[in-house]
Image 1 (cartoon, rainbow, N blue to C red):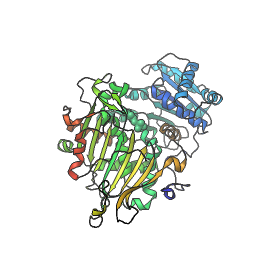
Image 2: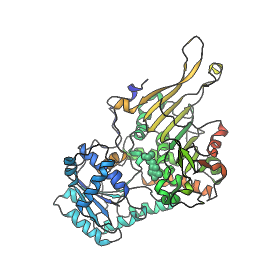
Image 3: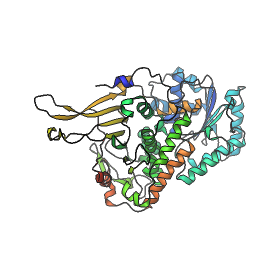
Image 4: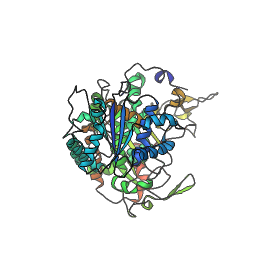
Length: 524
Ligand code: BG6
């Protein structure tokens, strides 16, 4: 059954973000251009936008990195990468050639002032004010460089504070991680905004680039049947699961520093939570939406060392198997200490201290090396009084209370779970599901998050980016959890075999209120 009437067809409300606006001609500079992100995500996204006619009339992309390379050499490398990472296959050589003539490589050390002088000279070479002064600086480097790069760009006149109404613009796009705690994020914010205004800073969380994450707000505020149930009166609890099938792979070194709490919860899970739980914004403007998200993060009941013990669970995978294939334990991964206590799994029980959500638990969990790759939100509604049908449920399938599942990825869609009569003479009931599927409704339209985010950054719409107070509020929550854990060793109940749904301690988190995790299921 389809929910088509509520979700298909032309939507007349203004869309989130501004991709419908014409994007002005500009120059993009990618710092850290020899990294993975550039060849896997950024260039394929820009190329896709070009194919779809969404790039500005005139544009240039400079890749800034240390390795010696010519423009032609860089283009050839990117062409090769595109064969693997473009979502339009096969890559059309003629169209690639017209895109590639806008790509330039700039060899330089991030700490060398002269490299920025020569970059400025190249940017200023064409006699075209838009290409010279409409600038997007994309920081795809290690975060320790963000501040210094901004200082140097400012020193050579490429980055300046822009006032509202200035015709030409400069923006800085910053990749995660944005700091490693609240204090470092605050310091980085200060450093960046020394030279530019907050509205020139675009902090990335690639989850906000996902269609299904953007749809959370559209879904909530355009469907009266759900919005009126979206509160403590009707909702028993909410579960947000971001499960990953892969382990840490080659990123052990980074992961030892980060752990799942910083890597996933601080950004992606708290972003999904704020969209699910925030109040309706007064408009669809970036500042209205972001203010509501910040308010929500600030309403999360602060965690003390005592509540962390009851409400925050860590886990780490040990060797196991997945689909019959053996999987290494985290401690056997490359660049991971053999007695590491870093978490590869986190489960939290959070409460939101506001009128709408008082007393409703929000369970969040994420982990590596779980059985499936799936991100979903399950809104579990309160049960009906248990007076009429308790005896009618079949033993293999007990009566379940209503739930709504927003499947963010993969198999993007929304399911409503309810009970229905089993056909026949007996009055038996069984849980059934009404399902809306993005692909069958809209066709297989799966733009990469980075396409949308790059377009929005060029258009200057910050809706899908994290604001300064938002990133700091998210770190405050994460810092309180880390402080509660206090670097203590993991207990036996916090280890899980690779390929399973996490440690038993995560079940303990839900048990006191009689709740259970609902693991994402493949569609029938
Ligand atoms: C990144 C994390 O931000 O998100 C990774 O650093 C994680 O550890 C990734 O694998 C998950 O993103 P997605 O889009 O695959 O869910």
